[in-house]
Image 1 (tube, rainbow, N blue to C red):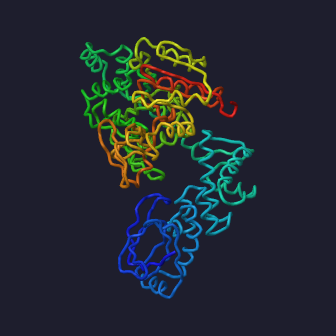
Image 2 (cartoon, rainbow, N blue to C red):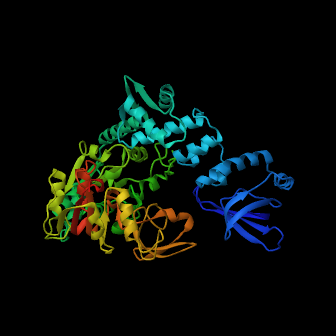
Image 3 (cartoon, rainbow, N blue to C red):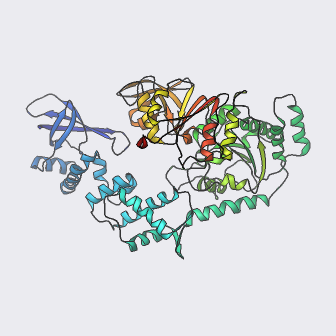
Length: 577
């Protein structure tokens, strides 16, 4: 280990706790030249000395001793040497896990807001070593709530609910809490408790609000367009290629009542939206129309096809991710009179609550979606519930899948719980797990899908075009919404270097800096959920044999992603081969 005199620190780069790189300009002991070293190092100040083991210019290990010169440099910089020393001790332990100085500098009360629970628990144990500390029990309660909500239920038996503590605590660093403390966490987390049952108060209240809100809207019906006004538009488009069932949806504009437009993949729901907007805008200004969808990808597709602005529900509400703040709410309503929500089947109870809270009761809302597709990731299926109480317009004629294929017949089989069958454009085979590699392809018109991330990761690693995580020519997907790309966009890697990655999405080249590399993942194989709302000429589906997780809706969604050719491969469990 060699010693270096510190001149100054360089501004850290990166956003994630394990990604932020710190750099310093230093002079090697006994020399005059300046060099820049970087790595997982502490805050350094002019006049300090640091011992460092380097690999090139990267710091592999370091040592900062409490010498008089270092203490003087800290005091001159306005830093308390004792506090610095305590952080240094913590960082010496945490850096082995890859955590940087920022984490060591975070107060124990905030650590669970900075890191994922398992990592935060390790850091907290190192800092505090008290499993019953208030900040920890509060974080534990929040994590258990998230775990419970992933089960998509609203009420549980106490023993079932407490079992979620075991799941969360097994990921943490402490021994499990006593039963009485778990009950205290439960009560402090906003959960109802009684008669041997536990219920999610927040979700229960939101679910009831959504139900009541729709009922109140039904009580405030008024005429939106007259029969003659709607008929005039129908006469205007009489020479169009619209099916009668698509034309019938225009009558949804007759009154202000909220309504549903539903249909399977490829039945022309977006075409219907276009015509509804045109009919409405013959009598009202288009600026009164809001087009929204739950995902960035769906919103962009909606904007492209309607030639009108569209945004995510979060974007329209100016809802801050991972925060309770919503700009548009019950006290600050959205300034629109016709609101069309595309891909409504993907909206969960919490997001529907946020949306309805911000929409004037007299505004018209049209929910568009496919109730046969996958359920929302979060709790509740408001779209499905609305179908029981609102007027429903059903679209059944498919315009997407190529004529002469049996893809649609198999979609019907999936919903009916019947086995998929080989036919025109459809292949169904039973294979061994080891045969999967022989079937894989990089064909640009083909999308591979599977419900399991583990298999998708293996396929992506097998098909990538080099040894790096991202290589020139690799097929990628963006997994975050930004101004340049949306969550779910498919593209290609143009180039990758030390500064970042250049990708191409639909002919547009975008430079993604290293600090945002996590926004990109390989996409030769993706989950069925990620494929929802998209399509491909050829789709290859890999499903485990006799897997109870593969239900009718997942299978239906997978089947209807294919336009011309569908291949479904049921593979055996590799442990049984």
